[in-house]
Amino acid sequence: MVSVNTAIAYVRQEGNPLDQLRLSRALGQSTITAEDVLRRYQFPDGSWDYQSRDKVADSVGSLGGAIHCLRWVREFGLADTALMARTIPFLESIQSPDGSFYETEAKLAHSPQSWLQQETLIDRFYFTAAVPMRLFSLGYRQETIISAAIHWLEQHWRDWQLVTGTWYNLWALLCVHRHMGTLSASAYQRCHDRALEWLRKLAAQPLTWLLDALQGARYSEDEPLVEQGLTRLLNLQGASGLWADEKHSTVETTITALRLLLDYGSIPLDPQSATLGG
Image (cartoon, rainbow, N blue to C red; front, side):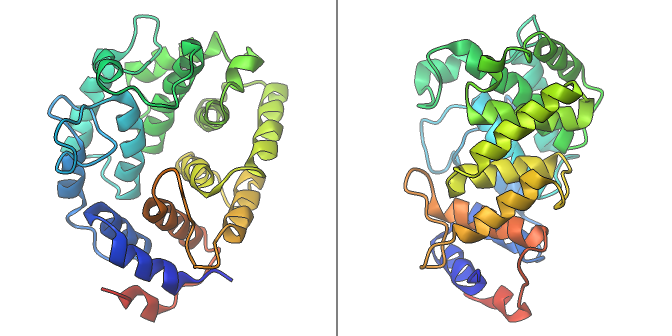
């Protein structure tokens, strides 16, 4: 049984301002200051960083940061704000002529992400799928950058080694397919089967990212990926009541797990829990 109270109390005690707002959102409380808080993660050119600019003095905006932070824009329902009015031109400015996306030269020169593959085409596939994935989740459909990215993906998704180059390539493609019907029935089933296979082995942090992306693509709780993912997420809560994350952030992973389980109705919320530590 998930210990909601322990998770809430931990986030209240250890979380930063964004974590606190995300918890409020999960508990159905006011998040009126969300746009102001998220603005600290965005640069004037529309790029984003993984952390608040208040925390990292020499931070630099990036495409990876944008993909990371746009899930919070969806979470708070801020698709029609100045945040996105700045983001779209940024994405347009870095899209390659062939429609694909890759991390910005500025980010690569400053502090390239440790997860980038030596074979750059693998991550180019991910970035190119992740941009329309995030935009679709925010209600964008007609932007030229989306159709150009989809066209590039259609030239490459038959390469199974490329599609399965990383686990996130696969789920990004499945989320795009949800909106565009990009894959044939047999290709979709092959991707779906592999995603289910990987899902059963994912740790809490990547599992929350997968489930968040599926939620953004409007997959229901009856979808096997969601159903099995939520069951695994329930089972991954530690004895301490948290979803521990040694590599990244236990606070972020815990609040994302808690929000997803509450959003999908997998756990009940005691009204008194919402006031813990508040």
